[in-house]
Amino acid sequence: MPELYVYPSFSGIDLGVLRLRGVGLGNLLFPWARCVVASHKRHLKMIAPTWPQICPGAFLRLERDKRSYHNAFLSPRDQVQGVRKLWLLATLPRYFDESASEASRGIICFRGTSGGFAPILEDAELVRQQLLTIVRRHHKDVCHVDFQHSISIHVRRGDFRTPSGTNDIYGGCNGVRIPLSWYVDVISRLRDLVGREIPVFVFSDGTNEELADLLAIPGVQRLGCGSAIADLVALTRANVLIASGSSFSMWASYLGRMPVIWHKGQMLQRLYRANEAIECEDASGQSLPTELKNSFAPSPARGKGIPAAGEESTGIGGTGAVGHETSSGLRARGSRMF
Image 1 (cartoon, one colour):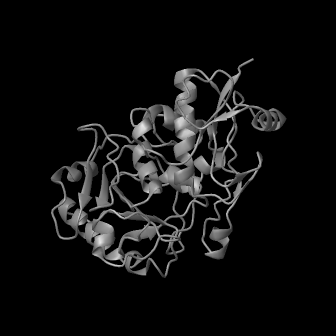
Image 2 (tube, helix red, strand yellow):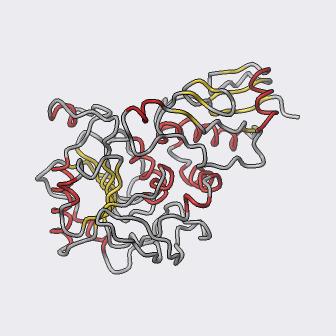
């Protein structure tokens, strides 16, 4: 029987089966991923995380996603859960130094976003496969859209604040809303670079009214897959990603390994190895990397995003016919994903 365990200790008041208060999915994934990597490399048994949470702020702000995560993830059989989880959390000593090299009995707890992606930068494939294992099937199987030869955009609104000036954005401030005018400008320049009207898919926690200038552009449609994790799974399959300055966009990039464009000052960390994919910062009016044009060639390389349920983990998609609402009220039909 192992005496030393690892546990992703999420924010808020952890009751073992539910947490009171908490943060968004992007921030929860950091301690989970570090814990997964430590469990794998140190051969330590993992105590199942407490994903379900009640986040009052999401209700007070009338956000589309209430951040509950109660039906988003499975607990693998090899993780400690149920009554035994509660017993271990109540009786064993806890260590909050994640290295804890001298510990022989107790629980090593992984908390917060310390270091961002730096501790897991070389472990993207392991993290991707483990996330694929625990995401419930209906979240992986909800978005059947062909993202080949298209642009995906993530626009963060919700609890992000309106910048007081350009220095907030260019200076690398966290939690600020990137102006829609920048997204509109990047779409225009990308289409000019490629020489045709590339389809654009928008993912956002904002309202249609907040996104009106973006959704008014021909060939731009909004996609919503019904949950934060389903949206993240869909974003990992993006052909080219225009990112927000959020950890959610960073996770889509880290897991999907697609070319990604960040607003200048908002790329908090480089996530790719040298020459792996385009990872650039951009300011309105400047030239985009000409290599981006290759992403819209007739036969682009297949993506590494999280596949839909029933697909192989290579990212090659199926041909489901499940649709979903777009901003125009049409239904997007299923097609092969890359």
